[in-house]
Amino acid sequence: MFVSRSVLAASLKAGQSRRVISGSVFVNGTSAIGTTDENFICATLDWWPPDKCDFGTCSWGKASLLNLDLKNPILLNAVKAFSPLKIRLGGTLQDRVIYETEGDGKSCTSFVIDSSQLLGFSQGCLPMSRWDELNVFFRKAGALVVFGLNALNGRTVGPDGNAVGAWNSSNAESLLRYTVNNGYKIHGWELGNELCGSSSIGAFVAPDQYASDVGTLHNLVQTIYKGFEVKPLVIAPGGFLEINWFTEFLKKAPNSLQAVTQHIYNLGGADNNNLTGEILDPNYLQGGSYSFSNLQQILKNSGSSAVAWVGEAGGAYRSGRNLVSNAFVDSFWYLDQLGMAASYDTKTYCRQTLIGGNYGLLNIATFVPNPDYYSALLWHRLMGSKVLFTNFTGTNNIRAYAHCSKQSKGITLLLINEDADTRVEVSVSTENPTGNGTSVMKQQEQTERLSFGRMSRCCKRSSKDMREEYHLKAKDGDLQSQAVLLNDKVLTVSSSGEIPTMKPKQVTVSDPIRVDPFSIVFSHIPSLKLPACT
Image (cartoon, rainbow, N blue to C red):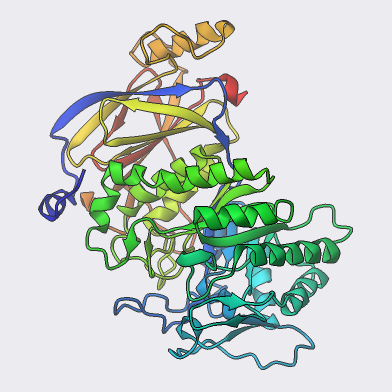
């Protein structure tokens, strides 16, 4: 479904429902189709300096790892609210960073624009005083930290971008030792950023060489963390998925790493004038599943025990687009990505960014959460690690996902309505919708299954049988709004920087789930107990 600009302009605001239709979501609770990490939600912090600009817009300000205000109370509270939030430190310039550890004898200089150099910037430096400050913040906030190492160190990059030679790991080794000696906890060490094949940024490394370098990192971690009961993960390659490159890479590095990371910017560049149209096109969104399914198949065929991660995803590349990537409309893309990724057994999904660019979860100037922050937080709190098969019938404009609930009974449904003027009243069933009478459950589960199927079509139920609903909408129905309504109330940070409490509304479980035009609903149904969730 292509959304024309004229239709799009007329539909950017959701008004009163012009029509109401019925829909049904089938949930197969026999077994999980995938599992995620308990801390599936992840966000990134980048290296870009204030003078990083894209398409004439400079949207980074002081959001770099080197200059971010770590004393801002909203920033601290925003991370603490996840308890914990997984944070990946990295990005394009990470391969141009030197770590100023004791004994290196190198001056610690900042990134400076220089078009004659690789990636358009001079080499930068991470002072250990700043690394200390970052780790104090991460400890206070309870973050799980993944750090991206400088994979280009020691290589020679030719005019064609081919990076020749092995990774010089000595500078990284000094950082690892400094980190361990100071008692800083790192969840994972990731090697390199977007150095894979023809889709690489600035430079590329051959898969066999990359595999060898990952082996070097693996040996470093084993040596430096010797005696540790839990060692950091070894993660790579942090690039755009190229089937042949990833396949060859995994053949050569089957036992050296624990997570394989791909990057996703499937909406195109930030200068794409049809970004909103793509986000509101269910068929376009569905096309994003290929990157997840392809990596899942590559891992399956490789025999590796490594799992799939999305190490970086911002939707629109080159810093995202103002009033799209940081507005309510982006949650239609973002939550759908989370749902699809989890369905294909992706363990972690890192959003570009926590703060910085136009795709940050937090506003770059005020640190106030953008709509996607609240979408991420609700997912983190409600959607458990077990993923259930779902099938929606009644309209193509509803995207539906289901998980076993997190730290509670029952299941949680995520329903995304991309229709501008249609409210959908959704019933939930665990009965096989094929109509052939074949049960998808074991015989002994028939009674409970059929009871819930009838429940959705309105029957006598106990008044104690309730569900919890979280309805997200744009303020004033404006999809470009950076304010979001939860159950018709604006979510706002307190004067002291506290993240708002997100309370659900209670609904009788026999009532249909009402999904308004251009809205998103999380529905927690504690009374629905399925085999996959026990």
